[in-house]
Length: 65
Image (cartoon, rainbow, N blue to C red; front, side, top):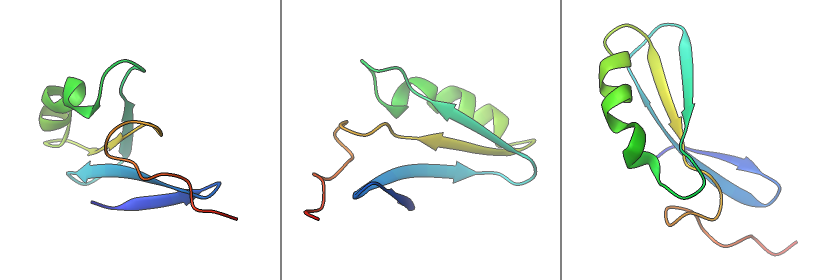
């Protein structure tokens, strides 16, 4: 899974499709699965990106400074 590094943490995301980017974020109490249907539909016409919020199961603990 691709990552972006920010403030000592890896932020995981998925990217599907091509074209202009549309970024989706899940709510605080849910994970990326709540957006999976939207990502599948949007990927047909754009680059649908789903970022996984920090402190959710897919993330790692912070890297010591």
